[in-house]
Length: 409
Ligand code: ATP
Ligand code: MG
Image 1 (tube, rainbow, N blue to C red):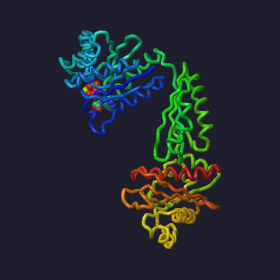
Image 2: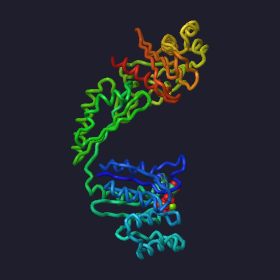
Image 3: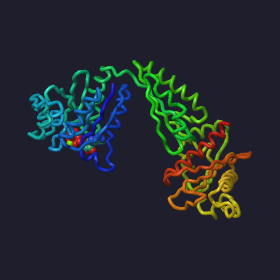
Image 4: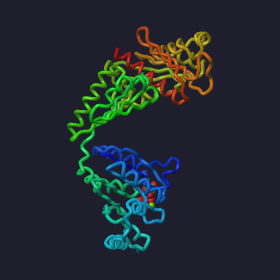
């Protein structure tokens, strides 16, 4: 079964206002084995809301709306339902009485404005609202379900859980199982090439997503029940794991820094960093991991050349000869961090994050990474373009991955 989720309310179209009701509903639907096909946010316009409802009703077995059920003139979801289903609104006397009694119980008087909330399109049922005065509306027809819920998050959630979810579960969406596979150090196109022929596996769906320096495969499997969904998921992710090998660093909520931390902890080793263009982001990534004090020693942000020398011990002559953005300086930063912090491993990062500062032989996006250990260490050069944020984030991810691969070697 599939769903459409529509958020009604002009205020949701302003910058910074997020449809968190929709986020919550999509998550709950997935728990019920129902995948959302599309989502939308729409202003308080009857015709536009009605058009969306009509399209959604054709597209999916489940349509969920939030917002626009209040007593005020700009609450238009009821009217839109009447238009979409060509079912005139009729006032329910029992609901009118309930609203009136709700108000008088609170020492207030209900009037025509409040009674609007007792209007419903013919054929729709009420969804009881235990927390507020706006009841929801339920339309069930030809095996399809539409629920209109208030915009107030607490009311919406309570009503969905109490009334809508049980109906959807009864309608038999089957079960879904999900896993996210995380890959580092390979471009999206490479990952896609490696697993593409598995995308069509029966009862499953795979989405590929690229982040700076890493790629995610979001895998969903459907089954008649949870056991079947899980078995399908395990079979597919197992096949993907086998192909991705060491390039796969983790799954679900695992982070690259967390995985590196585990590997360090397992061998009782420590790491330190000396960063230029990432300005502390690498150290921040390590310290985001709870318990990182066991294996993260500390770091140096050596932004100015003389600080690279005075704090990280990079010889000034090396910077003069090779330039601050060079393999030699990255290596010296890594060695400097390792020595200054008495760590087993040192990571050095130096690069041109832009937008200015690029040259013909060191364009924006040039980043040199180095790993220092008790042997020859490792170095890596990135030369992919991008904006400042992307270049810095990618440098952090690849630096973490450089250490991960060393620890697995
Ligand atoms: P009410 O009975 O309170 O009028 P309503 O159904 O008319 O309910 P709205 O007036 O649209 O709902 O919104 C009520 C409150 O809920 C607003 O403060 C709004 O910020 C919040 N809200 C509405 N829609 C959403 C949404 N999609 N995501 C998060 N919050 C929302
Ligand atoms: Mg309202």
